[in-house]
Image 1: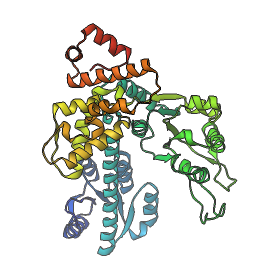
Image 2 (image 1 turned 135 degrees about the vertical axis):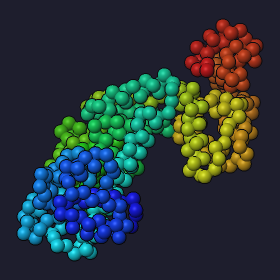
Image 3 (image 1 turned 30 degrees about the vertical axis):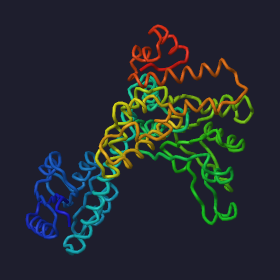
Image 4 (image 1 turned 30 degrees about the horizontal axis):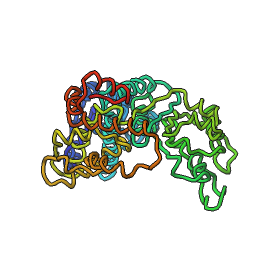
Length: 459
């Protein structure tokens, strides 16, 4: 038995206190025995206790009053009631007020120890749940979304405001930008944080399976439905449902989703009973839903129901100043996960990471960092250690002309080449515009004009 389990015993009969203290200490518990219930309540305010054991009949304060005080201030603290054989009715009443169990006097030692053991296990479970909940809140709070750029600060400002509401949210952004992380941040900073966060990727299932996944099904509703199953909407009751890749829904499912958003009511597949849910829906997509509405592949009424609050997630190339922060954050995490020392990137390698366009966004960055951290033997990661798609920009540019089609728009092609050269110069110049202009042999004013023309972040 763990010696960290602490028991508070309250009984006005000193003989019983001595018996209980000896029995529980022999079992390995840390025991505090008090014969004054008021003093015991003061003790609880200043001490950590795993289980309270109190007698039912005591002068000044009864066991029921002790129970009510404990449940008011420490609702997760298990309370065991001891009562004489003739007062079982009052003990049963105490159970209705939240007592964990009751033991009749005189009690069998084994019976008492079993009840205490179960109460201690419950107390440990409550404590672990709280730690987990705090960990999740810490992990998915908006403060854990790494970045200080204006683009990400604008996004987090919307997250902070919408989290307190019940409004449906549409999160948009390219693949790998962290849409689910934003959805979790909304949930864990909202009044619903004690409820479930349920996620479903609408692209991962075909239409028939997805309907059952979302709404559940009744036993026998289709071949293979051997039991009734709750869907994701029911699982998310009193919490948040995150619907990723919402643009992949079939038209039939779009109709059913629209009804749930309007009425918060649905039926399981094969069922007739209407089921009500209290949920907050956060949907996400990397597709242009407004364009899909114009094309007739996404319902306009559903689009407006989903797009109550719109949160656009900027791609990584539009928040380059966040890349060094992300490199440091993921570097520490990867090192910890793999049991290796944290490795640093050289200044030039950092510049290459910052200058790269990252078509796969944060997910791609994280994968590249893990590959480097695990595979590079030294403590410093240089340019030569970076993947070819990042360090090979110059060699790729030299061979790019051979890959271009014979027929092309010369003006557009030259503009694209010029923009690539400016980006490369900025990387080589540590993003000092004056130095980059020198490398390219142009004036600072012309450099600034080119940066604006090609919408290149010059830092």
